Length: 198
Image (cartoon, rainbow, N blue to C red):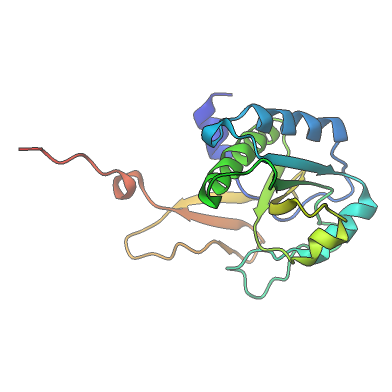
């Protein structure tokens, strides 16, 4: 698959085939790709926790907030919850720069992971809204700070892209059939050409 097709296919999924497991070795492979991805100053301050045990997934799930635009939806029901997670942490002993670097680094790392996962039919959701209590739940060391949680699994929903019309709403939504619609600004709206220096 060409990279353009893969990027277009790699959509955020929030409902999963919970009973279809994701192999731990597969998660390790995704983390290896994150490790190889670029990062600010080559600081490599991120570490990752792969989770695919059902008992631990069940402990993580209540600490997460899902789909802020879907105000009447509290997250996936039992049977559609993620069978796997990768927790992205900053190791404060390694992190010496501003947090803006970490946020860029985790974006790059998780995009590498999600592209590779999608190429294998596994999709995910980046979750930045989670309870601070998750740190204690996982008994993490004081120098570890969770910056992002990536939920992963085989999709149990359809996600389609739509071109955003002028004056349209950027918020994603679901139709009566449960199809998840994601409006995207057209290229001509995001493409700025350099002005003539003269």
